[in-house]
Length: 134
Image 1: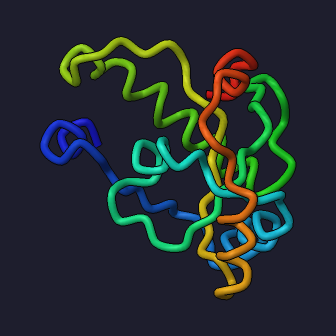
Image 2: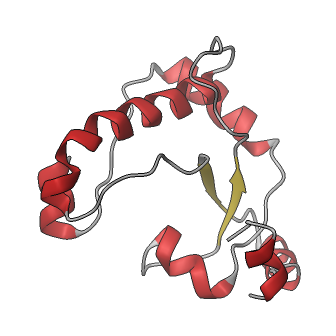
């Protein structure tokens, strides 16, 4: 993973969940409250090939708590991956200060869904920064 980050500046990681667990995680994800990220930050979080995606932030993960859902299991796996990468961070050119909350990314279901997400997309402003949301 660290080598891919060094070479490409991004990395796609495939989970090794069973089909049933992955399906349950997707069903749980679809029930989340979705929105579009602030336009100025979409590329930072989603990459350059942004289509009609919507996102939802997962609640902050407590590593001491028991995982109870497949979606929490996915989030825990990312925490473990991030923890393992911390050993390689000096090679990557930064020092980690933890990880952000998990971000679920799904395609919009329809053109109407995409239009609704665009209408509700927040604009970058000082309040978002002051409140720690950016």
